[in-house]
Image 1 (cartoon, rainbow, N blue to C red):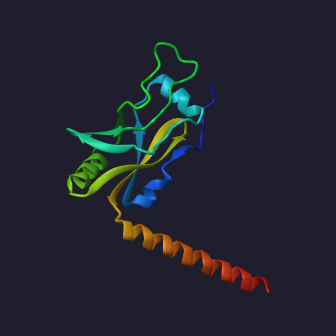
Image 2 (cartoon, rainbow, N blue to C red):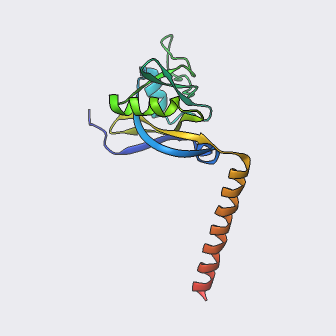
Amino acid sequence: MVKQTGQKPIAQNRKARHDYHIDDVVEAGLVLTGTEVKSLRLGRASLVDAFGSVRGKELWLQNMHIPEYTHGTWTNHEPRRTRKLLLHRDEMEKLIRAVEQQGVTLVPLSLYFKDGYAKVELATARGKKDYDKRHALAERQANREAQRALSDRSRR
């Protein structure tokens, strides 16, 4: 069998960057069952309600939805089961220290295959207030209008 290379995206959590201030981003592996991997290879997953949690000295990903594999039998997995995250010890301790601070949470940003292995991009994040979201939206629209004005000016 040929070894896969490169990166193949599966799912992204677009709302995370809107709802949170992203501080630090880390790539982590996942402990998955066979039917979960097969379902992911079909491009079926959702990170909408997912978050990371700490149990003892381990990190876990909760509420990530991977639908059951259609051709699976009685060995099929639970769609929203808790999955263990695989990180180096120093990265794990750094994330655990960050999460112990008040107001910091672990948010998955994207899920992808890298060289044949399922990986998740995990970020430490702080929640945004409503006025922060409105400010970011207004700033993005102002930048878009400025770019549009520059491109219209260069066409003339």
